[in-house]
Length: 204
Image (cartoon, rainbow, N blue to C red; front, side, top):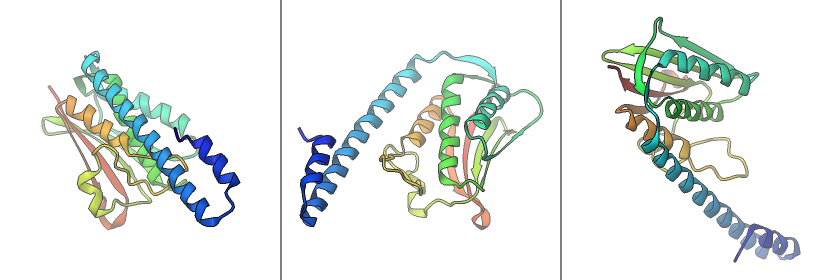
């Protein structure tokens, strides 16, 4: 079987430029296949977790506040703000799953923005439900990706590392929000001010 180590060994021995390019393409293919397998495995685990999740009534505002306290430690040095509507927002939910969805949106916002940009989180009542928004400055979404953002294995990250990123985070967000009878959407803010991801959840 072709492995990354075997391709690395071949690349170190191959002196011909064409052979090096061929081996590089093969190595990228192996890495991408491995990333797809990991992504599919993570999605399968989450779908099982949704079915087995413990549901309880929680104050969503308190949950979001606790999450943001953790983000301020995790992303120390980044501009991170929180705006909460006064009073509790009681919701029957799977709190661990909602926290995971928020984790993914904040991680996505941090990846789409730079060290001088701001990530803003807000939670408020809206009609018979509530809206949880994550906004970031410093980037906008390509128009041709907007309808596919929450599909599996789609990525719009501008700052890619060596490890392939397949956009599973937003797919996970959609799975969690759908399980809570909610909706999630994304849009560019006016005048190129940034990006907003918005979760709408019904309240009892």
